[in-house]
Image 1 (cartoon, helix red, strand yellow):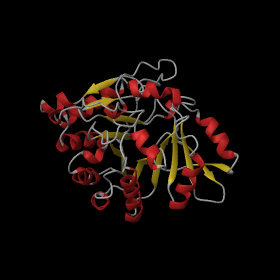
Image 2 (cartoon, helix red, strand yellow; image 1 turned 30 degrees about the vertical axis):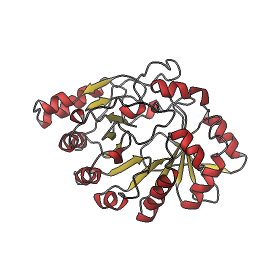
Image 3 (cartoon, one colour; image 1 turned 90 degrees about the vertical axis):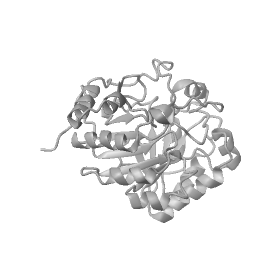
Image 4 (tube, helix red, strand yellow; image 1 turned 90 degrees about the horizontal axis):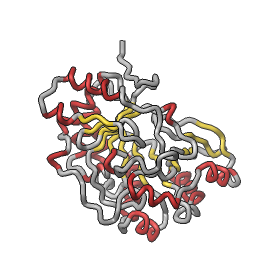
Length: 328
């Protein structure tokens, strides 16, 4: 009988997000300070062998979904090699990638050949000047090229992650929906979260997605829908089309009751909740020569620390680490 990994609240854990680096080639205003350089040193990163050992342990415990994240995962050298190793693990049902797509154009074929089939691309605007304002870099054309290269290669579904920022990009939701409809992408709108000082600074741009949905309903007929992927978005479909729009609402309408995931940071820290500090350090075990059973037991022990929910609204200053250090 297949093993099932559960937390203290009876939630089945079937999804692990694996950060392969905390570094990023962009400095999005809600994620990283423009002058930030205090990243983990490479000797602190889990090696590909170590990542494969941890993911293998999760798979033996019944986890079938793995997402490669960062930081920006494509700045990690030879990422398709790691993807190919993970895709070959018996029990992996879904291997996906989150990226800003700046480096995606040159790696789409290798990633697809390795077994990655789904891609989420961070794209908060369709305006090049605004893109530079949000990200701190003039890479809009490279992002768009990478995104369209993924489409041509056959990745599906391709999901666009758009952080809703009041006073910054809140005049573009309809344009982004039209862009996604044109290209067959899924649109996911995301509320800002108080992760670290950048996230708290971005709180002045917080926008309740219930308001955004009401605005979209004035233009489109929206019907409830489901999209495979195991994530927290609540989806609707634009009637008469294949366009699906997801709403990720950690602040206005949290989804903790159905949380099915944990996050493995590049330094081997297992984070049990995006908005809490509960964690378990796996790297010392790996580098002390722990066997497979010990790694599995450590994961089970770590899950006992998973909290019931985050407290972004009640304690917005609680989480001091940046999003890039957590694993997306």
